[in-house]
Amino acid sequence: MIQGAYDQHLNKIDAETGKLIWQYEFDDVIKGTGTLWRMDQKWIHSYSRDADGSSLILNDTEYLGFENSYFTVFDPNYRNGKTLNGMFQPNIIQ
Image (cartoon, rainbow, N blue to C red; front, side):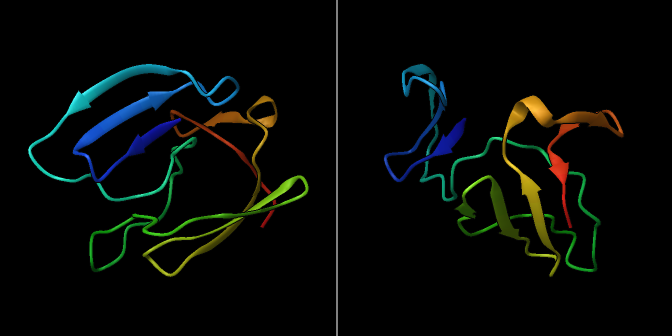
């Protein structure tokens, strides 16, 4: 998992163990929530494909809204992911 923080660090954390794999210090805060997936979202007039919010996980399903107004429902289990358009992505449900 990649996680930005207000202490100006970008951290890579093992999602299963919670152990820090590496850390890089920037000159400013890194806002955002933990990232496990890279999703091939559509570009819109704002040139943004960000997800400036937290996802919601209920049982075996994750819900995530993007800044480009798309709302995605997917399986968060990386074992069910696949490569699409050159990116490893989750199994999209909706």
